[in-house]
Image 1 (cartoon, one colour):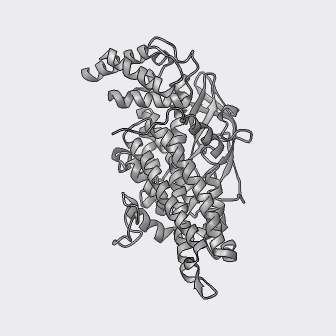
Image 2 (spheres, one colour):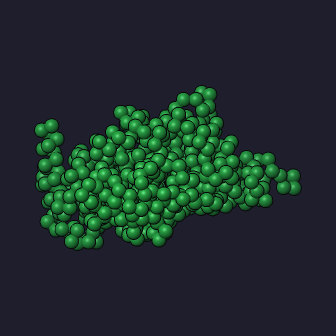
Image 3 (cartoon, chains in turn green, yellow):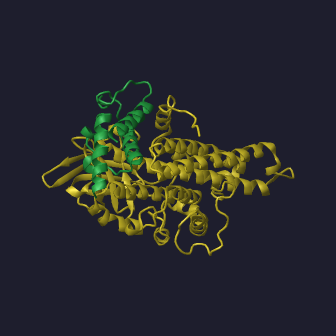
Length: 84
Length: 390
């Protein structure tokens, strides 16, 4: 699940920035890719793809720095959803 | 989706009941708006009785869920409804736009307490909302915002001046974007909060009845619950999402302007003769009418696609909405100019609606992101643009 989520998220980021070489552990903020438009697209992509709603308190920069951290957030929220 | 006649004449008596779709929106607009839109324009305001009729029709925020007082209207239908309102009166559509932006933002980003406090009144129209972003020195350039929100021990203090606030003369609740220590935050500010002052802006080029105002916030003290949505890096998303919906509504209104230009021009060309020949039989007039028909359909399809993507929660809706707004607003300006041309001197007079449409159309190229900003953003799509394979 987590590996798939990581690949899907990385694929979305690469599709958005085809000229860039990005791997799953790279900080996309440090690379300068994130503006408010892309942040919104990213959150919408994660919510739609994985059937989640990301609560306001989870919209923290550390959860979105890398494809790996976003995949970890997906795993956490999916587990919370399953337990609810 | 029907392209030729999106909503044939309603069979129910016009103006009765609530607006739930394009058909009922068309009936409402034809009964309550179209006959009086030029009067609103001349008076420089939408009358209070129309505002009450809009409330009775459930038009302010029908997309809110039933538990919040809406009917859960989908975004495709909302676009169709705003198109119909825009066909009748861009000033009223502008009031709907900014109210929609505020109500949606509360629903999307608000805490359960914020939603419970505000959404029922926003749905009913008991509280009217307005959107405060532009300032005397910053319009589409949001990085130039100077209004500040300073965190205190008990909440926030807002200082600054917002300009060109649509509906500001009448609104009860302002959605104010202000600079915080971390980012740009969204704040809910009641009109009656101490330190808020409203100065009307009249005599604009277009949407003259949209009751613009300059709003000054002087040491406006608010509680912690004034902040809407997340803080930190994602705070900018609130603005992005709010503007996206505003852009969608303006795109819809622009389609309505094109449709209104088409209907006015077709009717005029059918009756007006030149040398015994109806205008509609002249090839140069036919060329103008054919372009109106074509662009009305194309703009409507772009709008519907943006709405479909919104309903699907697809992030592609953001770019689709930019494109729909850019296409529809530029087409509205083009066709409003041609509508005046078809009407000749009559088109420059107060006796026909096309002069108002011409002035209103120009505004669409500027609000919710100028067309220059739109083109820069759309150009960023160039490298990614691919045709979809089934």
